[in-house]
Image 1 (tube, helix red, strand yellow):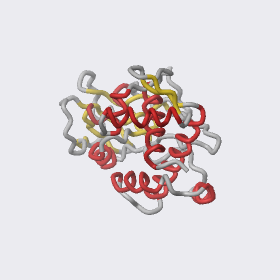
Image 2 (cartoon, rainbow, N blue to C red; image 1 turned 120 degrees about the vertical axis):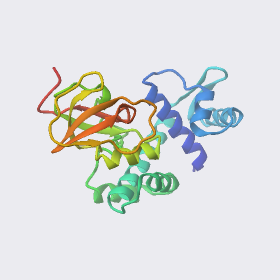
Image 3 (spheres, rainbow, N blue to C red; image 1 turned 30 degrees about the horizontal axis):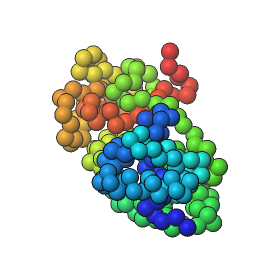
Image 4 (tube, one colour; image 1 turned 45 degrees about the vertical axis):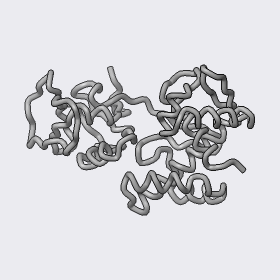
Length: 244
């Protein structure tokens, strides 16, 4: 049985490689920063993963998962995202509590518990952040999307995903109800004005660096959303209104 630390490393390597969209190895320093540990600690663990045939590690070049390591990483990610869905949708946990609790539990649930949880939740394909939940065979349903601040104007959009790196960002997004599944339309931004329709609501308190905003129609509401915040909300055109 693998330790939680080993599983955490496998999950982190998979996540970083997926985020980069590249097939190359993940660098030691990047992994150390992601896990908030020393480079020496990372190097020791990567050597262990290599010995266990869960990854291939080459000094000064980085690490890539073996097929066995990738399978375990996807299993832990599946546990985590199913647990987050349960904790958020059923138990009402907030973003920070949900993530922390799922981090603790993901290493300890059985396959039977996993299957029952999946069934009880109605076989969800995405977690509360909009990230895909791997199937038992490791398949994930990916939906292409781009930051709200980069989406086309006057096009019906569906929010697909919100980034989960900062709890305060997630809380600000939640206050505006720009969560996965919500439908919105970009009316304009600081560089491209759009005639105001309805009452303008100021975006949630958010310590962004830029004063630029985008104007978003969300149902009957017209929102003024800081561009820095909009960078964390990913959307794509509604299925019945493909991008041109």
